[in-house]
Each structure stands twice: as C-alpha cells, then as structure tokens.
Image (tube, rainbow, N blue to C red; front, side, top):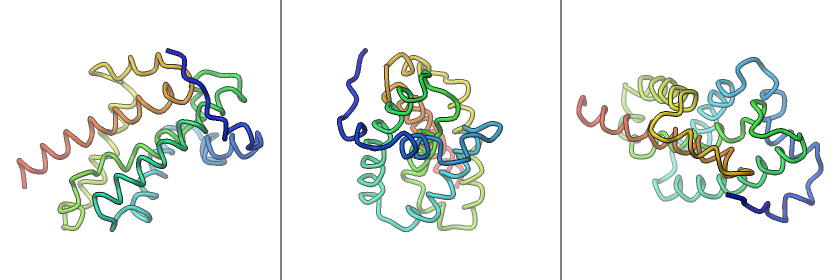
Length: 167
C-alpha cells in the first residue's frame, strides 16, 4: 500500500530529518532499536509519567503523527527501507506500553512494570508475532512505525492482564 509523504517534511533539512529519525547519535549505536527503547522509557518517565490518560493519548497520537512523517522522509533521504538506525519509531511507541498501568507505576512495583515493558516490547518488536510483521509491508513512515505501535499494544495488553491478575 502506497502512502504519500506529508508536505511539511519536505521543508526540513536532511540533517534535521535524519537526526530526529535516529535520535542523533543513538541510532548509530550497536543494537539501535534496543537503545531507542531505553531512551523511550526515559522519555516516558520524564514527560508522560504524571499526565492523565487523556493527556497520554493526545500526546501519543501527536508524536505518532510526527514520527510517521519523519521516519518516512528519513527512509527517502537515506535511500533505505526501514533501516535499523531509524529508531524514532521505538521511541514514540514505548509510551503505549504503559496505558492503564498508572496504579502499578505509582506503587513499589514500578520497577517491575518498566523492566517487563522493556523486555516484552523488545520481544514483540524483534520477533513480530501475531501478524505484527505484516504491518511492515506498508510503505513509508506507516511501515516503519506501525509494527512498533503493534508491539507496544501487545506489550500493553499482556502487562495489563498480568498485573491485574497478579496484583
């Protein structure tokens, strides 16, 4: 499925697009998706941790929209399809892992939520089970970002079920 790039990405320089898509030097580290996920969790703890569920949803949707454009444009400018150094997708998807988990994040089990979210997200992002892999067939930013959104959604579902059953 062909998705057209938004026009606003065309006015940004190569340097801006690539640095945003790779989170600067982080995308050049070994295992960039893992590092992008770590930075995403740090971002969540600093920016999202104490906002309401509606705030989390609105911010996530806004950042996903920007990420779709940036990641798609970075693919074009790098001349590669979903290259590993593009990690903005992991970064913006990570907050989705924590929807509905605020009571557990405000408890002594917060460390377990963060650790299990990280491990599960990486599991779903790397192995891409349950049809997540099929989302990569879309072109542009949609193909780059949607598999990470699905991995985060799967992580969120598993964590919500687990923590509600156990605690």
